[in-house]
Amino acid sequence: PRGCRRLGLRGKSNLNRQVQQTGTAEDARPIVKALFTYPIKSCRGVELPASEVESSGLRYDRLFCFAQQLPRSEKDKAAGEDRWRFITQREFPKLALLQTELWIPEPKRQPPTAKGFDWAAQGGCVVISFPHEPSLNALGLRTQRVNIVIPLTPTSQRAEAKGYSYEQLSIWEDAARALNMTKEIDKSDLQKLAQFIGVRNPLALFRVDDSNKRPVTRCLPKDASGNDFRVGFGDAFPVNLMGLASVKAIDDSLPSDTSAKGQLDPTRFRANFYITGTAPFTEDTWKKITVGRRIGRNDKGLFECDAEYHVACRTARCKLPNVDQDTGVKDRNEPYTTLSKTRKVDTGAYPHPCLGMQTIPMFERGIIRVGDEVQILETGE
Image 1 (cartoon, rainbow, N blue to C red):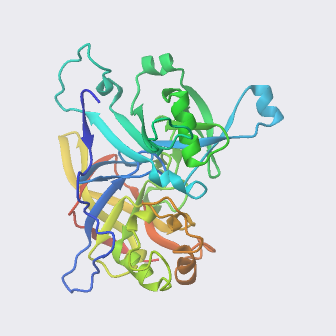
Image 2 (cartoon, helix red, strand yellow; image 1 turned 60 degrees about the horizontal axis):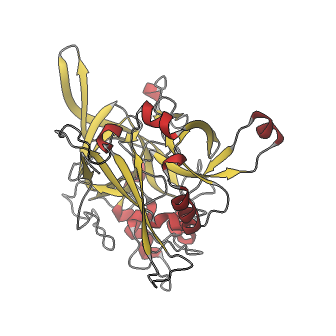
C-alpha cells in the first residue's frame, strides 16, 4: 500500500514452536522471547520485534473482529436494528488460516501523488488474505488468493463515503458500540470469505470504537480501583502473558497418541508476551511486574521509566487451543482434556482450567521489546 511500510518480523520467528526453554538454571531470568499482536480477533497474529503498549493493550491488538448476524426479535425489527455477535476459532477454526499484515504510514512519507490510493492518510491498513477454491474454474486453476484491504484509522470522509455505521456488537456478556466497516469489503469477496470460514448467517467486520472501549471490571488493582481501565475486542483484559515452560509442561503431559505431542505450538494460546527463563507455572504467583518502558509527560517534560503491569488473574481456558494454527483443524480432545486434568487450579475460574496470566498496563503509553527482562515486584495468590 502506497505510503506505508509493513510492520512485523520477516522470516524466522523468535518463537521456537517445539522446544521451550525452562528456567532450571540458577541464573535464569524471565525474558520476553516473542511478541504478538492480533489485529483481527481470532485470526492469525503478527509477530513483532517491539511494540507500543497502551493502557488498553498492544497497539493494533484486537482492533477488528468478525461477527455474524443473529435472528432479529420483534423489538429489533420495530427499531430497524440488527443484532451481531463476535465469532472466534471456538466455533469457526478456519479463522486461524486468515493471514493478516499490518501496514503503517512511513515516518517520512512523500506527499501524495495521483497514482494509487493514499492508505497512509487512513492510518495505514490491515491486509487479510485467504485461499479460495472456485466451484467452477475453466482453466483448472483450483486455488486463488483473495486479498482484502481495510483502513486502520479511516477518516470521517472515508467513513461517510463508504457508509459505515455504529451498531451494537455482543462480545460475551458485553454489548459494545462498534463501527461496522463491512462495506469496505467487495460483496463477492465477502461471500468467498463467509464460505471459507463456514459462516452461514450474514457476516460483518467491526472496528473498535476508540471512544467507547469496554470497561475492565474484574480483578482490578486495589491501589488503583478508581482508574478507568478499558479493553478493545480482547476477551476481558488488555494483555495476555504466557510462560513457555508452562506450555512445554502441558506438552509433556499430553497422551502419546496425540498429534500435538512433542510439538505443542505456543501460538495456540494466542498470548501477547511469551516469556522464557522461568520454571513451569511460575507466572501463576506473579501479582505485579515491570517489563519494557513507560513513556510519559509531567511538568518537567517527557520522561521514561519502568513499565508496570498489574497481573490481574490466571487465564481461564476454553477449547480454542485445540485448533491447529497451521491447518485450521480442531482436535476433539487435546490439549483441553489434559488442561482439564492438570490445570483446574483457580477456584475463581472453576470449572475452567487455566494457563497464562491476564495483565493490565498501569500506564497510558509505553514500549516493549523482545529481550526485555521481566522484574517481579510482588507475588502471591
